[in-house]
Length: 608
Ligand code: M6R
Image (cartoon, rainbow, N blue to C red; front, side, top):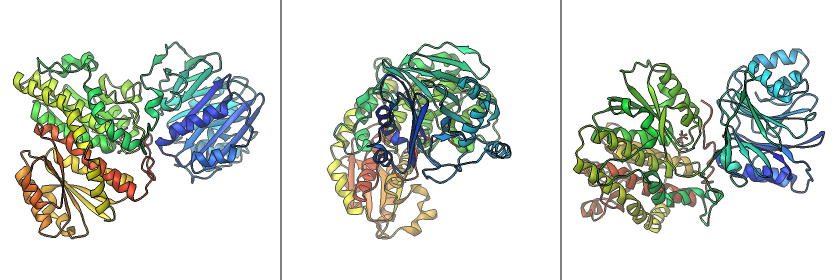
């Protein structure tokens, strides 16, 4: 969802900005633009569509200047046209601004500005920012932005340049991520580390209601109340090659194949095999309360929510804690009433999902303690939670989340195991769990080696327009995640259902035109799943089973079988997910879909 990249330094800004925009493509967008400053001149270039369309437009255009701001827009206010693309400018074309987020009071601001003669060029909320900043400008761009911040309601990560102050970019943040990069040949700002990781790994995080003036020489941060802020730069772990395809046709496939390493990264330095107890340093600040906790709520959206659903069942198995899982977008509208010592776990890949942020803010207001399980270091959720655990999975570029889901399952298991071992879980159970966790990377590799077989299944079924995914207990959230993956990237309609619910409705849909994917490992629900699969087959529904290796019974029932290795019941979700991801990927590929950037979707959903 909307991306920002800015550069000010000694090099030509144009190629740096275009490179940054390409790195942000995965966030989802429908138009792009940039403004580059050369002394007192600012050149504006925008295009509807993809970055490649912008590039075609400006490839042969000389755009001199070492200061620039660039943006990918995901339309909210106004259609994805060139006129609505960022940067936006004021009447006199002195101020150029790019913005992520939503200005909630833009209607009233627009009306006021219109009365004073301002003519609008776009349908966006962002344009008011350019007019307001121009109105407040009195020689200091920082002050003009500060005054504007006090007038606007809503969320923003923004960057501004002004014709009269060459060589300066002012950025500000409230509710939308904004990171400053400190480089050798200049400084950067971006909504996402990926945009600048090729040039620098030294970053400064802006907090909400802070702004910064960035020049080639340095960065000065201050608050909305004009208080100076001193903050040392941090080093990010991500490498430039993390954001490359490295020979894979899509980031999604690359990330699926990275999963053995993702699991290792989630566990690295965190396992103590002899004691059967994981070590999770990030939660130590709240450990004394956490070990006494008896009530937890996991809040998340999309794929992260399904990981939370698996997590609840793992907690039920390994601990004495009551765990609820809530969709973040619904949670904050409920009547929240927590027992003492309730912990809220925010599960989020990006750490910036607006619904999840809003949910934890509300929970915090009601007295709960916040924990985060996030992948992006320094993200908003990471910073707003009292303690947490990082996934350490590297960037996930494909819009469809794959490796982070697997990482979330791994980390939730570690957390449940740690708490369980301080409650009733025996040493033997702890040791057994750690042994089984340690075997997961190789077991995932074993499933990945069946890629050709899964591709052949996809080739047989990709033309079917409706699919059903069924699972029970641990398998139920995997059925929902499998269906979500398929619909996200292939646009095939798919439903994930609790298998026991099938006869209460969905069974009416079963016919030879509707494939069913059954998550059916040899766990406690096995016999019941066999019954459900027979119900599908007796109605001549094509049946694809994900089953434990060597399961002859399932081979007799199902049309297709994808085998997964044997593991502990509560670790089957990790293994059963991988065939679902590959099935979705190959169906989407046969359908020629834009796999890494599926239509209408954004990687990080920063609006509610
Ligand atoms: O960054 P988050 O984990 O908070 O994102 C939550 C969802 O937006 C995300 O999982 C979404 O459902 C993905 N497109 C799933 O593939």
